[in-house]
Amino acid sequence: MKMKLLGGFLAGATLIAGLAKAEETISAVHAFPETLIYTKSFLSFVDKVNDAGKGVVQIDVRGGPEAIGMFQQPDAVRDGIVDMVYTPGSFYAAALPEKDALVASNLTAVETRQNGGIALIDEIHQQKMGLKYLGWFDSGVCYNLWTRNEPKFDANGNLEVEGLKLRGNNVYNAFFTNYLGAQVIDLPTGEVYSALQRGVVDATGWTQIGLIDLKWNEFLNYRIEPCFFSTDLGVIVNNDKWNSLSEEARKIVQDVAVQHEKDSVMALRAKRDEDFAALGAAGMKVVSLEGDAKANYLAAAREKTWERMKTVMGEQPGGTGNYDRLIELFYDLNAAK
Image (tube, rainbow, N blue to C red; front, side):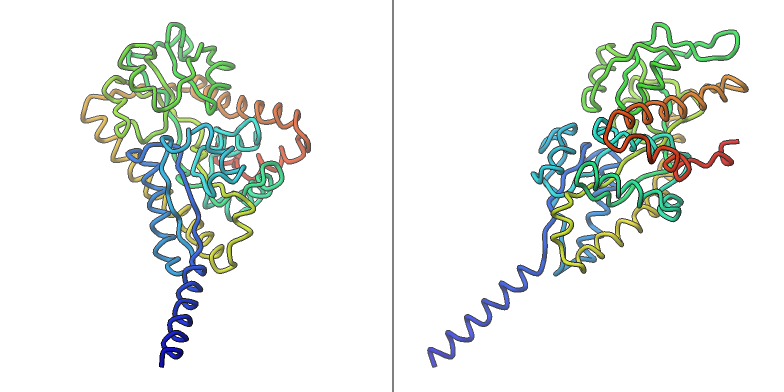
């Protein structure tokens, strides 16, 4: 009898161990605080994976920039310290300048998933960084320039930036400095609120949404149109970890990612409209460039970014071989006319 009980216990333990082993875990961190809309989008993706992957695969979110610094996260996932990171491609631009194709894009993840653009970006990530590019999340949202004081324009309607204390970062510095001629003050997102509060900066680039989440609207009073660029937020996974997952686990995660690319486009456009309405009701004013000044502004944003991409690509192994193809897949010249 004891032998039967022991045999049953061991069989049960083996079954439990087998089940536990079957459910694989992916550790993850995100670049921005949980309060920001983009992080909420990523966390909703995680919830979808964990629902679809019960018994097969789960994503274990370890935190945001408080867990691993936002600028250290790309290296951390490449080195296997964490399995997955949700981050702007601009945070690892030195290693992968091709991410600028997304920054200067006028398409979304939906079109570029269909036309092979994301597949090419994935291939480049694997070759250059040993990373799986899982998906381009929260696309279809562009950037505005936001200011504390009323913007000034020259006689030709061009934006004047002299005297602006403009916060910059890797996403738009090529545009701000090379075209607008601005002197920028580089600050991470988490330091901008206090910088605005203390008057260290009085203008910044930021996406169409998220200003309220960050509370920067307490200091910024003007939005300059037109918007430019696109968000380049994506999910990257350590390639060794990705290849170690079962085929079933990989399919679940990838399928959910592709669907989230679509869902996030619509969700964030709705959020943009909601934020614009709330900002307008609170007194935010909108000023717009017109005519040639508008056209030149948009062309410069695009072309200065492409120029930066080509220059840095040319300094790396493989050179500019993918340059023309990236522009073809991520930019619709007809839509820009």
